[in-house]
Image (cartoon, rainbow, N blue to C red):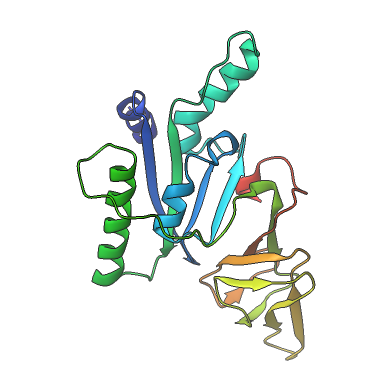
Length: 224
């Protein structure tokens, strides 16, 4: 049985599903279904998430959606005559980047996850007051992937977690032969939450992502 199928079988009756990952270079961010925005606010606040990205269908069949999307698909199918609340809070939590490995971060994240489970009544631990969230949820359709227009050496001007305005410079891309520099700018305002780990990139590679508040994309959102 494929790993994903085995995991889905194990999670099929879960009320809460936390799919823990890490990006290449990023701050903590969370993917979840639009109907779950309120339910994941405590988790986002406790984890210190810089972006909470919402979609009804993200594309690519992510694991969290395999557990939760059934409920809002059924609600849409049966309509208001048979109201069905989302009965599985499933999220994908990106725990920063691949190089962010330390005992301090591991302890911080473990404490936050245990606090979330305590807030939800899953475990019997003392419950602390929720911290203020670092962000409001935004649509996954509002994420702008910033792509390299040509090959070159990448020099970042922004770090993950920085807030940027539309038109602001994200990175310089230096052509290794001519030395010509192309400044890469975002088109949307938001938080620069993830970037490539590579510093020599090819044309068309995504070098970073900005989470904006206004939806403008469609299709398979996770693959863009």
